Length: 499
Image (cartoon, rainbow, N blue to C red; front, top):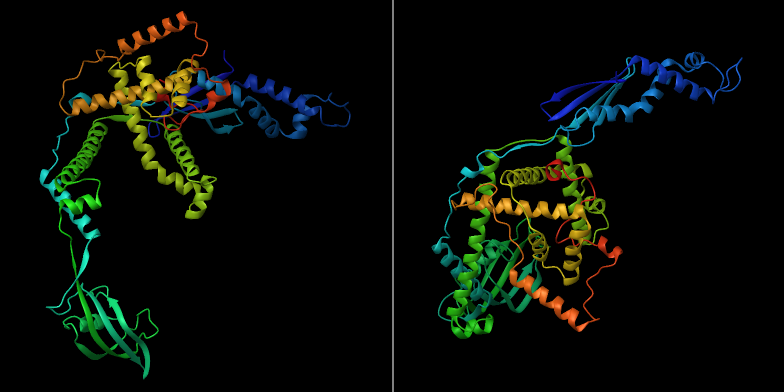
């Protein structure tokens, strides 16, 4: 009969399992005496030589509860092992101690259950494909052309009309406040505005309507809330219009385009703008398509995971963010949080929505890859690394690591399968024909590449070349992992990934 009686209770709300481990009384009493004897070696008890006092005397002296607590501390690992062995195929990781009761000696552990993922009828998902609105393309192109003209607009002298809001006006202006001359300018440029006034709304309004060469005297009170030393005071102005200029856009000609862009003609520039705007709008449509696809996928799916699984994802996202902030020059995340006036707890809380969305997306992609029996060749793993656009040395180092580090290889394979699952979902949602589960093709290295490689080997062997480019990498360099490809995970992969 086992010394540990384990009972199980599924905690539906949290997707965990409660493991209650009660230690057999005989085992407790035996451990109680043994622990008491060990404790007694350090005690001096009248009538007994050091270390020779009976266990019951030591227990009476120290108290049964105290010795039992010592026994419990010594048995935690053994009780945990006994608990996990009963649910080894059901849980996703280690169990956490929740409670200890001394009479009878009982441990309570809570372990995360393996994640349950049902993607539902993902092969039935269809997302409408929205075409780019060509009218919107032309509207945005027109805006870009106007922006170019506005950046190069010019001021043209005006003589046949009075001042209007938005004109560039050159004034002779004299201001008297409290009987003293506060301002006297022979040529003062300003642009009268209905909203962004110069000294007060009334000042700008008084200038509008004046003709070139006209003089005028008027008084006004500066606003109480004006950022001025004359706020709230009355001032007398004497003004004379010395010049009026109107803002005009330059003509959109080939010459203008050549001077201000990398294109020689208006037509070429418009075509480039159209292509760029269309690409931008297409990417927006694709982003919206993918958003609706994932929403539809999650809506029809069932996902159950434990708090520990979710917390792992939050911590992983936080670590990624901290690395990013360090690349910006911050010594640590705490330094940035101090500047933002946030606690680490507040920071982690803010990450939870993004972490949850990413976790559930990855769990669904992993399950779809499993159900579709997707696979990845060595060539596809290598191409995934090549596609990151790293330096030749980094690319070579990471490809070599695929054969040297099984953990790294499994991680890259997981990323490739997720990518394939996502591409499959996209094709399904577009209504395209896709292979049946288990029938998906795997891309192998092009035959021409393999043949060229064989020829290179033959040439090297024939020539006896000693100067072949070194591809071996020192062991200590193998630890350098390019962040652009993956963030190295040194902790346990969530159960969805490891499965």
